[in-house]
Amino acid sequence: MESNKHQFKSTALENLSLAVFNTGYQKCDSRHTWGPATRDHYLIHYIASGKGIFNYQNQSYSLCSGEMFLIFPGQIASYSADSADPWEYYWVGFNGTEALRLVNLSGFTKETPVLKLPDIDEIKPLLLNIYQKSGYSPASEAEMTGNLYIFLSKLMRAQDENRLSYDLRDYLAQALRFIQHNFADSISVSDIASFVGISRSQLYRAFIEFFNISPNEYLQKYRLNEACSLLRDGSLSISAVASSVGYADPLYFSRVFKKRKGLTPSEYRLNSLSS
Image (cartoon, rainbow, N blue to C red; front, side, top):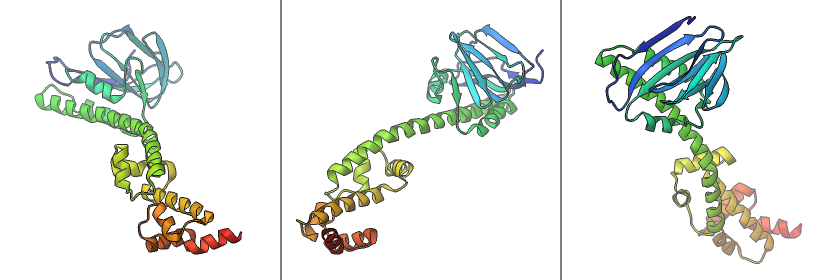
């Protein structure tokens, strides 16, 4: 028995770049099962509540609220609701010349047909919007497709953020090496970002995320820590120390040093030598 099932099926699919094939939602009965069978379109299910089993490509996935799964065209799949806590899911089926490219960008693959996003509260309304715009008129078809694009863009944005979060560690390592090798020159944050190959805003995000300070603050702290080492050594003049850590103006260097360390470079040196 299929209880509380609401769905829309298109009567025809032309060779469009992207078109909704079917959409709907269902609160399943205990052990409600579909398949094993194949689809002739891409089909995404989002689990709004409850849990169940998704069988695909000789693997079985135990899924629950907040997760979603995708069935690729021509692939054998089956899924069934849990007996004690049957799931409620929302779905959208689609196809078109652009469908595979958009699916790949969204993070789904045949090897990884299951996704879970950190911000799941937005998914249900996005899928419900597709269903609520369903109809057979050209206007309805355009609205369904437009809302499908919005839904897929949410998945893509989440993937971009995940990739960026991973890549930021690599970018950050390059930035730190660049600072280590070039702090004595008059480099700027723009120089660091340019060397790494990301924007200033992405570089800023990386430093905030991993160090909780801006790239400029990190560069300044690095330079002043190197200055402290040179001052403790005692073999260079204050001007030479300033120049050695990237400050062309010794007076400006002294002001920055005192603001950060609470002592002038000369006072810091005297304290270090006396201790």
